[in-house]
View 1: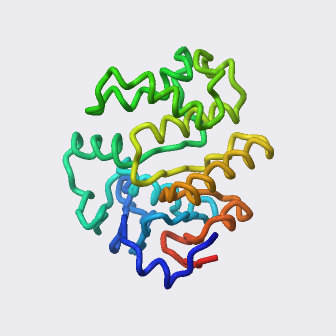
View 2: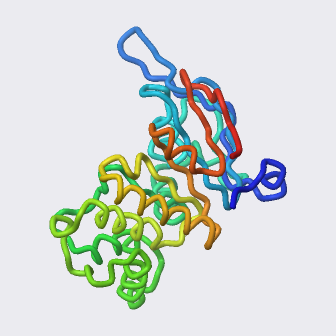
Amino acid sequence: MTKSSSENKHRPVVLELQNIVKTYRSGNTSFNALNGVDLKIYQGEFVSITGPSGSGKSTLMHIIGLLDSPTSGQVLLEGRDISRLKEHEMAQIRNVTLGFVFQQFNLLPKTSALENVLLPLLYSDVDKSLHHEMGVKMLTKVGLDTKLKNTPAQLSGGQQQRVAIARALINNPKIILADEPTGNLDSKSGKDVMEFFHKLNQEEGRTIVFVTHDQELAAQAQRVVVIKDGKISISKTQ
């Protein structure tokens, strides 16, 4: 079920970008990858960010995820400016408040599925005695309870991405950020991953922001944000 823009206005803003500019410099030349981006993400929204190659969508995702800092402008998480924090403070937010799913899966190759899922807990305050149970629960949630000991090489691409999703969920983040999450998957595995994201959003109310160049995938979101030449050209609720 999609939410209208009027419904969004009655829900809390979980993330807000205000006049974000990101400038890259090389020698005497400079280039604005983002040029004055304003964006609000509401609690429980499923938002896609799309646009042509080089439009700035991945740069935008990196700034939302505190993997990069804006040249100017503010990133507000629940009203708090997080764009100028110290590295250890940003690392804490990345680990606890944001869950990341990447195109390349980013799993440790010689480590089991369970151990990969548990990695974020190593830097959290969660009691260590609970780690194993939490990891098993998350892998069961994504349908991989029989693959706990398998390494990435022993898993299909779709299964590896589900391990990555379980890892992203382990700290119960406020926002799930997915950067081209189906880019390395066959069509069936990609469809399964998208269905799981929809389930997380619709049944658990998870806030999800994902980047994709695929227009059909982007259209599945509640709201489609189109980036062009470093600016938002369209923000349309489905």
